[in-house]
Amino acid sequence: MNKLFCCLVIALTALSARSTLAALSATEQRMVDFIDATNPAALELLVDSVNINSGTMNLAGVREVGALYRPQFEALGFAVEWLDGSEFGRAGHLLARYRGSEAQRKVLLIGHLDTVFEPDSPFQTYTRVDATTATGPGIADMKGGNVIMLQALAALAEVGALERLDVTVVLTGDEELSGSPLALSKQALVDAATYADIALGFENGDGDYRTANVARRGSVGWTLTVTGTPAHSSQIFREDIGSGAIYEAARILHGFHEDESLRGEQYLTFNPGRIAGGTTVRNSEADNSSSAFGKSNVVAETARVEGDIRALSAAQLARAQARMAAIVADSLAGTSASISFDEGYPPMAPAAGNLRLLALYTEVSEALGFGEVVAVNPLRAGAADISFAADHVEMALDGLGMSGSEGHTVNETAYLPALPLQAKRAALLLHRLAAGQR
Image 1 (tube, rainbow, N blue to C red):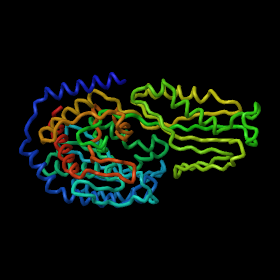
Image 2 (cartoon, helix red, strand yellow):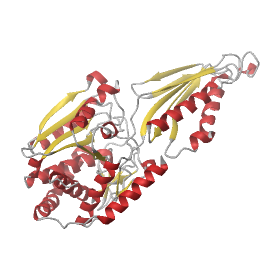
Image 3 (spheres, one colour):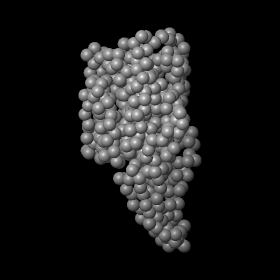
Image 4 (cartoon, helix red, strand yellow):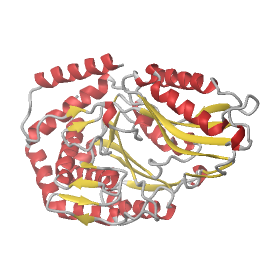
């Protein structure tokens, strides 16, 4: 897989080097000027959206962010609807459509409304740090990307270029914590991708405006459940008692960590994110919490660990799952364990069409004077909604959103000059795709 990805990146570099860069047309310059003139309003919209708490499980907050964006799309002539998420336990999604009268290209634009910061987080508001940076929950991941998308579409509408595109926008309400069943949670994305030719994701990628994603690793959750023989702690290791559930959980996790066939796989990672053990364990899916009851003088009867695997291909994921299951099965005396795997996010493989799209994106960036855009190493980016679309379109590209750092932490920061920069790139990319450039 490493060899495949490197070969595709080399091919992209060669293709980009052969490209003949075109100067901005008069229409494109008008789009650039429009984005510069309207950037203060775009920044205001960003501030307003960041200041609405939309942690995934704050269903009212997610809907409120959708309601904030809805008139922005409607002002551009989009037909907008809210897709209720009650069937999959979430707020739902915002769906916007524009069917241009001269459209020849069908494009899917992907964003999300939710963040990882629930109402009980200490991180709730936008704060300007200096002339170029600001912090706030979801400012880079990915409310900045949503505003960039809107700015790009507004620039196209300003010059009449939207008429040459058939655009579907899906802003999901559960990207950070998917609803269940996944087939219903992601149905709107899959349906839109099946209809489209091209998918563009406005996530923040690796946070660097000089990069974009032609590939993303999939993310699949796993749950390890361990059972031991309860007894007084003085009897641990006795032949009929064994080692207890916590020791067995530790053995398994250490086995994952040290196994060369797991640690040695390029682009493969596996992480235990939550653990609890004792006499009894209680788990709450609603708020992603676990608690345990036990005493220091009692051999642990049960343990539970939850984590994820990230892989660049379905085959790599299957190999990892099989090896993890084998490690789990080699139980210590007096214990037993099982591991189960969720559906999760599929991988977005580094397809040739994605590389062609990145080459065009680089042409646009260089024509704007922003320099080359290079492919993100898949190890530098997490899973994203575009993975559900990538297999259904001719080409896909992600990471077109807000540059920033320290996402998913209370220090999440955005690089504010990226707001107009990325909007210009996206607008011109869509404009050239509408004109038939490949």
